[in-house]
Image 1 (cartoon, rainbow, N blue to C red):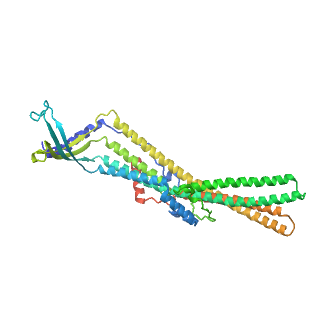
Image 2: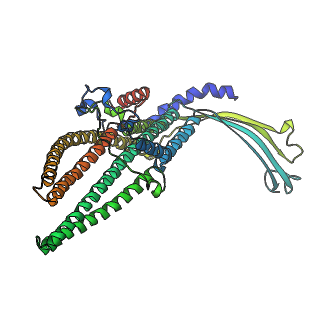
Image 3: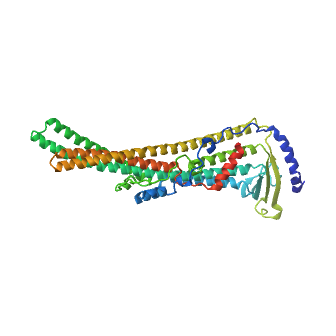
Length: 487
């Protein structure tokens, strides 16, 4: 029977094997988890797209130092490079899966010096002699993807590629926010350093005046010792701030991918005004503006395709193979026409009884899909919580900043009055120092609130996606496929 006759009978054999496929049944095995949707979460559909930050949102602070630090971090941070390497790894795996859809061609050649057995298939004089055994073949094979197994594997791999791409974007967004927040932390500490130095100067002046008054008999030793203790306390606080500034510098330098001393001369600044369009409600579009949510959704799609791949294993596996080459005993006849060898034919296999192996594999894939779905749901809920937290913190901070500004206004007025009374000879300079210290203490509180506002703003930009925009075609593709399987 020739090759053409084999190919004519192939559909009949396939039909017979499909009839036997009932022995390997995957019924009753399906994912149980459900994806959270904006409707189920009561997310607002009325939000303006302008509430989402631009890709380079940090440039709104107007600080070129911060711009340079974030650019350096994106270029050199090792953690971001790890994410990029994982993306390349996923792309390579997808290329491997894609290659399975096409014919495979291989070549092999072998030449072996061998002694032939005198009691085997070769009669004398070959039997018992030592000869060269030579072969050279080119073989080809093609696995027909009639049941979508290879395509499902490819789609699963592509889902992992898209997830890795989104992960890389998420890592970049997180890195930019971390650099901004660390920069604002350093700015706060350095501002507190300057305030503490001024307080130390006032304390030393206060101690000097008290010592003069004690020498003149106008104050006792108790007051003098208390004044000296205040100076040493401020010196202690200043030393602690010096330590915190050094640690903050080191952390910022490492975020940018540099050695710890790279920011030794950096003087950070807090922005005086932070302007941002923030939503009054959590927008439904958030789920497409968060790279981590998008990555989680693509992992769900990848796992669903892996389920399809596992189901396809229940169906026949059909391969077509062929080979052509030269075989000869001895070197002289190896390349002769009569040494040619060739063959071709189909191969069909079907699991009929496997003691539950395929069902167990499918159950494992569906369980992994449920894990991916619940991971997606967790990511969505955390995203909504982060936005809600930052909005609540931002609103509370605005109230605190307004109250603190009013407090500063009153204390500045008190200081001006104390200075005027001193210049008019109505009070001594100790009153002026006390009034100025009160201003410095409240200025310190204002610096903390401003730094906190900057930190919350950067956190809000991160929570809103940090400028990430998912390609709409891939977004719709994933959502449609997931909805079709899970409906």
